[in-house]
Amino acid sequence: MSIAVLDFGGQYAHLIANRIRRLHAYARICSPQVSLDELQGVRGLILSGGPASVHDPGQPPYNPTLFDSGLPILGLCYGHQLLCRHLGGEVTPGHTREFGAARLQIGKALGVLQGLEYEERVWMSHQDTVSRLPAGFEVLASTGDCHMAAVYDPNRRIYGLQFHPEVRHTVHGMRILDNFVELCDCPRDWTMDHYLEQQAEELKKQTSGRKVFLLVSGGVDSSVAFLMLNRILGEERVLGLHIDNGFMRHNETDTVRRLLAESGFSNLHVVDASTEFLASVEGVVDPEEKRRRIGAQFLHTRDRALADLQLDPEEWLLGQGTLYTDTIESGGTAHAAVIKTHHNRVDLIEKLLAEGKVVEPLAQLYKDEARELGEKLGLPHHLVWRHPFPGPGLAVRALCSDGRPNWEGVEEAQERARKLAARRELAVEILPLRSVGVQGDGRTYAHPALVWGAAGWEALEELSTELTNSIPQINRVIYLLGPSPRPGQGLKPAHLTRQRLDLLRQADSLAMAALERHGLMQEVTQMPTVLLPLSSDGVQESVVLRPISTDDFMTARSSPLPRAFVDEICGQLLAVKGIEAVFCDITHKPPGTVEWE
Ligand code: XMP
Image (cartoon, rainbow, N blue to C red; front, top):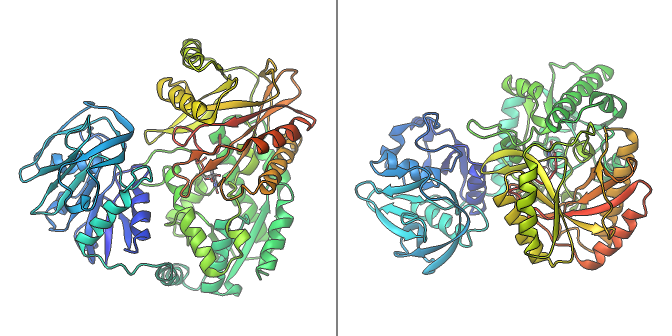
């Protein structure tokens, strides 16, 4: 028995399934074209949001008979508009733009809104609006800008919500989803044990006697996948491959070898391929190009290791600890946009996936679920709670440049940014380099703005949101931590070299040790250290600390750092030969992604 989530391509579509599973009901993702036959055992349908408009000729196709199935339906954002239009209502394009928090006034606290207050804080992100309801529908709740924010047909048990109950910023979103599960009468028997049983069956079917050569970076995802495969298939059918790609944290390979040995793993093969990886990205500046080449290099190194170990490639499938976030952000579901190509989703791997030659036991999970599974399987706490580290590692944290600033359309933006910052007596400068962001379910590649001057966290947070909301050339904001006054800096030519990677490794190691000393490892979920080729003398460079807090990594808040920590780490970093300035990234996700590239 389950709830089916029809994926119309929204960045949060899978989050809905995650939230339903957190309520102990089983939820699975389906294509909107799924047939009624394939929905055996389904007790209710949720239609996700998506980047399209119901007026686009290219809107995702769907199976119209789903609306006649008699199942309870909950449409969210795009799903709400789609169901209203399909059933005879009207949607007005571009009528109201509402992004972010909104106040929902509830007229009738019935059905999915049962038990909610008269007024609730919800999260909106839409441009089109339902302007006429289908026959049989009534309005349950409205916001100032959106009259039909929550609607229902009591007879058919169909609900439409313009806002997103699945994101944490909708304060009682879980209550709404819980009400829906209740009215679907879906059993609450889904647990991690069920997931393990189900995966055991699927893995046995997929491998059908073959073995798995699993890429093990030593992060939580691959370690959990390694443990799970060992348990389900047995050690003789699993071999872990740890590749030192040269983009790892300080002493990473030794740490991974030790941590896994302590956890009882003996079937791990370690390869040093740092020279090949470095050569594969020589002279590359573009972030997506870096990611593609590194992803492909992982496969070349695996092939070489198979040959060195004289293992038959037909007998050994590729294993990866891929999570759902890796797939969705790589544009890996039918209607989603590519935000960045994760190393485990490059073309060569997509090809193997299509041939059924890749084993990914965590591909339906989010980081918080992978961690829960790790704890359940008995992985040591410090391994489960290590900060995540991306496959392409420091390579996507060391920004490169050919030394030519990119100033397209920035002059006028600079003037507008100055006016916004001046209201808070702060200075701002748009920087001549770019980083990746995610806005309105799509990818951006735009400029960071550097802010400096005396200010509290709240003022900085507000300014960061104002700058990124109102100036399209800016998708990220950083704040100067030191030195003061700020050195006059320009862009220097810089590529991925061992020397730059060593400098970044040293900075990252200092930053991580300081987080640990200050007891901040859990409060701050992840803190990439990023190297920028911004320099006053053409030799030294700048570093950015990117502290965030999140549980699912699809959205994240920039995490404020305590003064004592900032003073200490800033002093330590500025004492490192080669570092002349230290910044802190104060951008939430969206609009900035966690990693800069
Ligand atoms: P973004 O930058 O997409 O990061 O907001 C979200 C989370 O994903 C991690 N990340 C990766 N992990 N391979 C990985 O295994 C990758 O290619 C990759 N890119 C980003 C990132 O560190 C953060 O935890």
